[in-house]
Amino acid sequence: MQPYILWFGKFEGSSLEQLMFNPDGYRYLKRFVLKQLVEDPKLCKLVARTKELVSLGENPRIIVKCVCGAVASHIECCDEEADGLEFRDWLCEKCAQKASLSRFHPVELKFSSLNKYEGACAKRFADRLKKACGLCCPITKEKAVTFFFVSPVVKPKSSKKMRQLCLF
Image 1 (cartoon, rainbow, N blue to C red):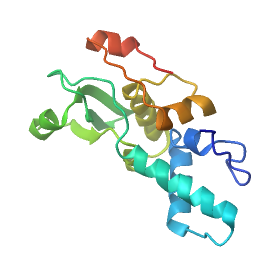
Image 2 (image 1 turned 45 degrees about the horizontal axis):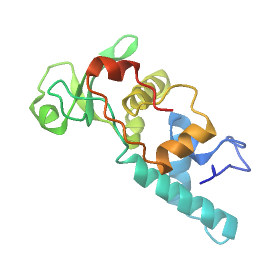
Image 3 (image 1 turned 90 degrees about the horizontal axis):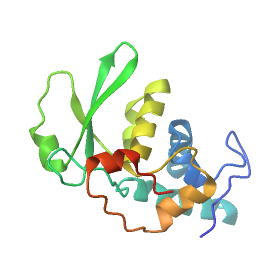
Image 4 (image 1 turned 30 degrees about the vertical axis):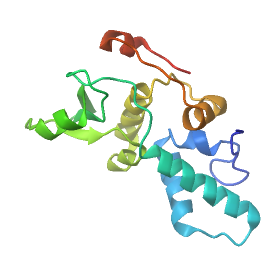
């Protein structure tokens, strides 16, 4: 599958797939989905691809493990820090439900969680999401398409290896 390149606007020349990893780009795409001006066939394809990506972004392939060994679905965050977000452990669904730390709270590892943060905090969360998905920066058009539309089978054995892992 080829990247879908925007031909207009603030993100002209970027692929829709790349924009999913950019907090401002993600918000831009979400506005498109909500507007749904689909009379033009080109816009119809754009909206359809955007909807597909937003849907895929709600259940990304996460490779990092929870402290209990299960695949993570959350990360512990504290947004009360003066310099922005502070992160702790990756958590699975079960451990996230048990987490009741005063300053830290579990945040889901999915693209819509980018909407919880602004500016530098949103960028820091996006970087953690990339790491959770096994992606190294920069995210090229090809890496982004591969992430969303090709399913690599990766099963690292330890969390130390996962910290070093870069799938794409």
